[in-house]
Image 1 (cartoon, rainbow, N blue to C red):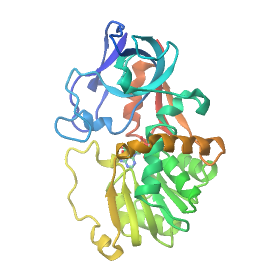
Image 2 (spheres, helix red, strand yellow):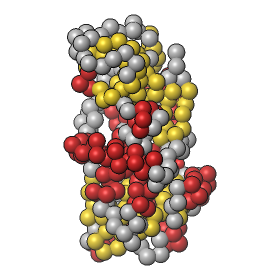
Image 3 (cartoon, rainbow, N blue to C red):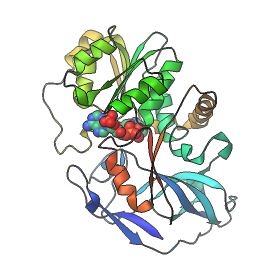
Image 4 (cartoon, helix red, strand yellow):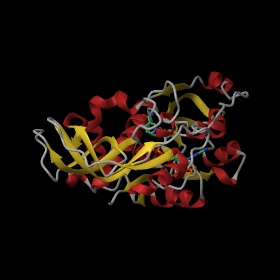
Length: 332
Ligand code: NDP
């Protein structure tokens, strides 16, 4: 059984030496436990934060700790749990071929809803983040201009389509021409901006959203967010979902940010965690599945093959290697 552990705490951008693949025994299930054979594991930007020492909303890993994340897999063995061998389950498990977990930490995946990998993407945590962030936090309304950053990623691509479904004009920021084409041609965004092709985000935004911004879903932070803040309309809503442009920063930049713009716009800026909405996860998943089923939401996955390549998949998130949800397909 192969398993990744945190080999050292990274400073700045992590590299392969941050990760170590070790051999362990295949675990046995104790009473109330399930052994899961991994099919897919999810790499997510927030994991960068768990590699730092100190307080954060996600508990820090210690050096030597197994890395963990969303896993979809098959029940390989169980001990008095009600699960059956072969059931497909999802949970927050180790980056490993096999993991043992308490049954209460696992949720059964309904294979009729879609390919089981979607339980880590559009029908999983990222999809639900997009759902609640767009509808409840950014509170998108018909006729709004809705802007999303990280727009071609797991959360952003779904957020933009949910805003479109709600009747908004949707503009996305993403890091390549291929992503811009994906957003405009495949997902029906009204406009998309390749932020790597320009330094003048404000001018690009003025072209794409001449009427200003009513709702902003921020996955990225930094200078793009500075520009969007200057184009917020009166009573705009900002959902602060992520700040990936700062996750590897060793010092958070403290130059003059564009906060005075919030005075004029009286915008409401609200951070949120998807887990705040836990009581309504089932409802959100059902709605997302319906939208995927009727074509309202299209989704893309970028799949890296092999557990041993999980670190590259994770590091690729910070390079923009992925379109849609980044997954790792695990085989022995
Ligand atoms: P993505 O699939 O969007 O992958 C990350 C993307 O971020 C990359 O593809 C890249 O695309 C973009 N990116 C990387 N570095 C930068 C940078 N310096 N500036 C601008 N863009 C950058 O990841 P997720 O959809 O899983 O997550 C999106 C955000 O949502 C993250 O910030 C994450 O932490 C946050 N999140 C928050 C949750 C919550 O509960 N609040 C829950 C889940 C996610 P590109 O090519 O466009 O640069």
